[in-house]
Image 1 (cartoon, helix red, strand yellow):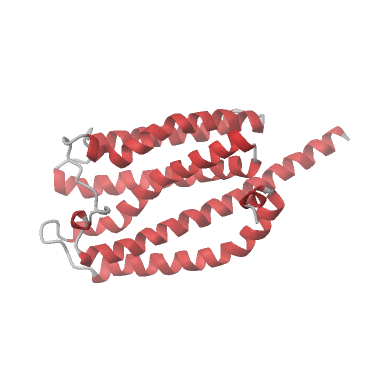
Image 2 (cartoon, one colour; image 1 turned 60 degrees about the horizontal axis):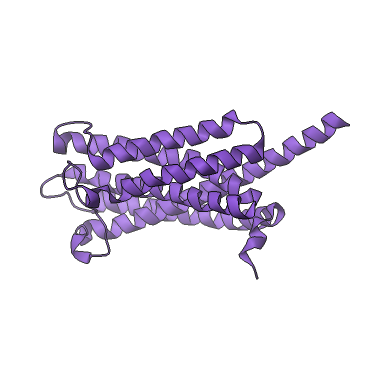
Length: 242
């Protein structure tokens, strides 16, 4: 069974319609458990106090902001190579969700950073690359809206997505490229010694799972909306020519 069959809009609509209710239920469960555990059960940090609990929103949002763009990169490449319209529409659907995650990460980072660093903002390598990524999100969304011809818009936004992927990767790995800057090292890594304490580690993983499921649910929902909107435009064009 080929995965490419899900690139067919009718098949995508059929399968996503069945999957979405399950995803929403899992999303609600993971977010309730992860955030409830993190905010009400996990202890305060010995240095940062209760401020550390912003971690349970900031880190998942930042991860999804970056990975949303990488998901857009993959679907944009599929569009450029295979010309599957569902992939282009999925990339378009993911952009506002990724932009929202970026805003959440920037705002929670500022709230967290002010008492820790003594400033709301610093032109730290990771913060700067993250802000530029947000600008790329805005440019990507604006470009889709500015071009009337859907296939041409998909081509142009796919190229923009390729360029913006540089800043998505910089946002993820800036702390490894530059040692200067205020931003701390990664809260999670493959090296177990680099992770936060277990009291924060496990609820953080559940929160991340909740944000991942939330992202998937919103992207599926928005992609279904984009498909319906394209069908409606096609019907309106047929009626206009009749």
